[in-house]
Structures are given as C-alpha cells and as structure tokens.
Image (cartoon, rainbow, N blue to C red; front, side, top):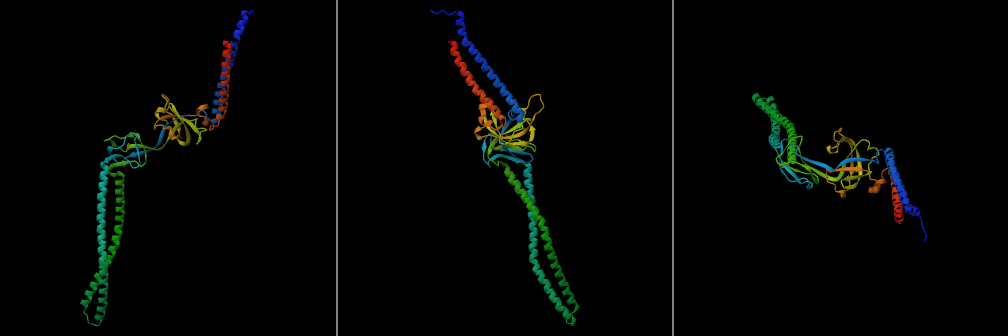
Length: 379
C-alpha cells in the first residue's frame, strides 16, 4: 500500500481551495474595474454631453386646463351639478349662479332699450307724417303759383284789385314756407334717427350678450374633459380675484417638468426620457423646451434653502400610462436594460452601452468558473 505523507495530502486538498480564492480575487478585480469604467464613462459623458446622460428633473402630470368662471360682481353659487373627477362633455352644465349686479344691469339695459325704441317710434311716426304731407304741400305751392301768375296778369289789366293779389301772394308764401319746413324736417329726422338706431343696436347687443353669457346664471363647459379638484361650494360668494367655479382638464396628459440650470444643455425636442411614478414608469418624449422659467412648486423645494426655479419643459406621455392628473413624477435617463431603446437616442450613451455589454459578458464567465472551482475544492 502506497503511503502518502500528510503534508502532501494537505497540499493536494488545499490546491483547489487556493485556485477558487484566486479566481474569486480575479472576479472582484473585474467587478471593480467594470465599476470604475462605468463611473468614469458617466463622468466623461456628462462633461462631453452637457449633463444629458445624467439628466434629472421633476414634474407634474397635467392636461390643458379650462377655467369655468363667473366674471360678474358679487356672484353666489346657487347649485353645483358636478363633483371632482367627473367626466363632462362639451355643453354640460357645471353650476348655477346668481348675481344682483348682473340682474340690475339686465334691467337697466332693458329699460334703456325700451326708451330708445319708443323714441325711434316717435321719429318714424313723424317721418311717415312728413312723407304723407309733402305731396300735398308741393301741390299747394304749385296751385298758388298758378293762381298768382293769372292774378298778376289780370291785375295789370285792371280786372283784379290789389287786395286779391296780396291775399294770393300771402297764401303762396305760406304754402312755400310749409313745403320748405316739411322738407327740412324730413332731413333732420333722418339725421336724428341715425344715432338712435346705432345706440339701440349697441344696447341690444349688450343686452343679448349679457343674457347669453349669464344664461339665467347657468355655467356650462365648452370642452369635454375631467373636473379638477378645485370646485366651489354652494352658497360661496365669488370675488373678482377668485371667480373660478371649477377647472376642466381636457386633451391628452403630459408632464410639465421643471428643469434646473445645467440639465437643459443637450435636451432637444423628440428626445425620450424615463418618467417614474413611484413603482410605475413609462417612456416620455420631450415635446418642447419652453423659453420661460417658473418657481418650482412647494413640494419640489428643499427645506432651509433658497427657492428654486426651473425652465419649463413639456414631455408627452402615452395614454396607456394612465397617470393621475396632479401627480408628482421624476424624469431621468434609463441605464442598461431598464430602457434599451432609450440608449440609442442620447449622444454619449454608446460609450456606456459598450461598458455595460462588457460587464455583462464578464459576469457570467467569471461566475461559471467560480462554480466549476467549488466541486473540485470539495473533492
């Protein structure tokens, strides 16, 4: 029987263990190298790409907002027909309001319209009378002119006395004066009627517009959509500074993001970003980087720090995302397998893709060698 010294047996048994430890150290070095390469690639890409790769922003899910308001003084909400979150169609009633100021305005306009109509009726009646008298006056003037011509010839022959001639002259003059008066009155009545007609048209238009807009106090939505959370209460009196009764959100949902300085460089319309809402996420497309800035909402502000501002950016999201209106979301760039299609749309991402691919190739190979080393060590 072959006798093997204990030291040799110990060396043979510890050989596979040393190989396993050596491979494990190599695996750690590979992982550490990959991590360093990834971090270095992120830093380089961030410097080259202008913070595009490390893009991060916060936003709010919203839609186009239509305010249903009552632009009248001292308006009181009499009745509400909807509740927050209700789906409404165009033309649907939202609320019924009443305003003493509007009621007085409607009454005043109605009285003024009646007065103007009465005055126009008087002018038109007088114009009709003048038109009726003008032919008679013209005929009288012609008749007295004919009498005067004949009497003047007879007076020259001594057949008619002077008194008769004087009476006919006086009658002719009176008829001519009456005709001239009627003609002048006709012209003046026409000029007098024009401003009254214009005033009546203006008053009637104001009256009809007020009646149409007030609509007996019924407020309706011009668009289809969803009722927002801001909704008045029955009995509430609206003021000029707070005249909104309800908000209607219409159209497709989108994200209004607040992008801080340093993250706008490299962001272009059409670029895709990852939109996260807690455990849910979806792909969004940058629709427009608006040329305005605004103070970020209070929930985005950092405590005990100056109030932050951001440039507004509109990001469209698919309807399938079904994000509630008013939710706070985060926008970022997807890495590795979380959003593979996104990587092709960002300029520096190809560097990161190569690093990620190499790391994924090394991890299975190293783990496979480690598994093979463990059975030999057990032996």
